Amino acid sequence: MTAAQNAKDIQFKIQNIKYLYQEEVRFALDSLEKKRKANPTFGTTIAPLFLKRNAFDHERETRVVV
Image (cartoon, rainbow, N blue to C red; front, side):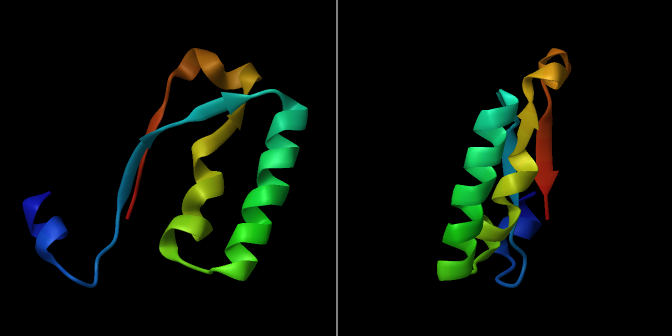
């Protein structure tokens, strides 16, 4: 991962998935979409990839996005 960290044109994020109730997911996605439209960055674009419904919390997932 050191090479990826040193490369200026490669962005990545490693984060645990956040598990929410269905309504919380909808609210979070709406909020994230507003942030992405106001400031379209790598972080605001990939943020929804780290959300899942509570129905999947048994997975205890961590994601890597490059």
